[in-house]
Image 1 (spheres, chains in turn orange, green, purple, blue):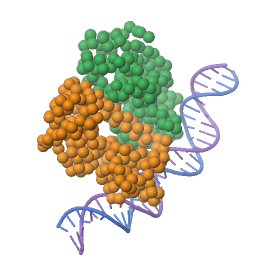
Image 2 (tube, helix red, strand yellow; image 1 turned 120 degrees about the horizontal axis):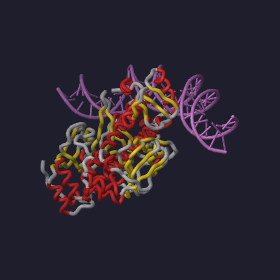
Image 3 (cartoon, chains in turn green, brown, cyan, blue; image 1 turned 135 degrees about the vertical axis):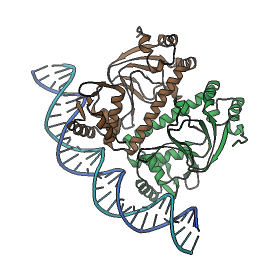
Amino acid sequence: MSLKLDESLLAPLPLFSLLERGQIRAILDQAVSRRADAETVVFGEGETAERFYLLLDGTIRVVKVTPDGEQVTSLHIPAGELFGIAPALGRDTYPATAVTASESLFLSWPISLWHGFIADYPGFATQTYKTVGARVNEMNNRIVEMSTQHVEQRIARALLRLVNQSGRRTDAGIEISFPITRQDVSEMTGTTLHTVSRLLSAWEKDGLVNSKRKKIVVCDPHRLVVLGGT
Amino acid sequence: MSLKLDESLLAPLPLFSLLERGQIRAILDQAVSRRADAETVVFGEGETAERFYLLLDGTIRVVKVTPDGEQVTSLHIPAGELFGIAPALGRDTYPATAVTASESLFLSWPISLWHGFIADYPGFATQTYKTVGARVNEMNNRIVEMSTQHVEQRIARALLRLVNQSGRRTDAGIEISFPITRQDVSEMTGTTLHTVSRLLSAWEKDGLVNSKRKKIVVCDPHRLVVLGGT
DNA sequence: AAAAGACTTTGCGTAAGATCAAACTTCCGA
DNA sequence: TCGGAAGTTTGATCTTACGCAAAGTCTTTT
């Protein structure tokens, strides 16, 4: 549950960039830390928001489920970011479900501390609203993409987003640092796993990517950008 | 430019619901009011955010333009809501273009006042973040829709959203209270004006809607809900 | 080591919707 | 009041990507 937190490790996070040592310490002192296996549900859509979270390691998949059971991935949260911050959106309930995409480590605080943090640490508020803004922006772009682009371009962009957000440089190219299936990609792009599979096969043949079971390595990001459209 | 503002008219707005008379007065005293014709650009995507706005009358269309000139409508703002609130998203630039969908009346304040308002009037902050939250939610739903639903369902839902947000009850049904073209609807739903036209024709034949040039009246909202899917 | 489960690949037919094209209607300004 | 601009309708054709089906790999369990 509780863990010795090294603030010299956490201080470099953008979230803390505007805070002083003592403030960071004060915030961390009230945190609870937790480790979770891949595919663990951290919280579910509609639940009353009891805690908010900071992802230290791993990746979180933010998912919505339609009435007829289809899943849609609205967002991926990379390590270093807050998630489950319902109060920043004036809500007392989580708007979507958060699932760990890989083994993950995160901190959490009771929601009751939120307003205090915002009020006492303006730097915290600033960074938080930047995060919200970035996500709104990302969602906006998703809407534009879904409205105007073909599947191929959407998939290209989705891969690039993942690679930028949580890519790991290898000799073969940049690898997406968590296990990801064709199905997952299809849920990010509003298509089917079949279409994703066909496309990855084609791209593989062209030397654009290199994908195995639950693993995708982008070999030629530049050409993928071109495919993604202007 | 300046206009005698009656705060007894404005006080009922959700935005002011948590504030006292004097606070509302203080806020309104610093506002500049403006009238604009339909299709006026209030601000453009990417411009540095110099002012933030409160729509008193009319409707605002929030639009993104793709590199190749296609337009995508991300949101409609109804009277009574704030818009252009870049600072709430930690941005110093507008993330999208705002266009009046009909003749409109709005107030505005210089961005420099934002932080003071947020700090001095907690009720203002609360309501503001609720607004942001509602918009995030709406965008999220749009993404889910675009990912999982067919054009027919998306158009049905788009019309229902407009009707709920700014519908005017008439004897024939509920009418969308601002001029709206097939093209506009297609830009809200990620389809073409042709498809929208065909669909509206079919619905007209079924007595679901009643549409003329730049005008749509929903006669049977209930059946439209059914069409929109669970 | 076999069997079951999870993920992927590929082929084929089809349907939803885009694109192209052309005519028609309504509105507005000269 | 005439002419053009803006918006709408409808038809014909074509493409994308979905749905269905079946077989192929890799992984885990027993």
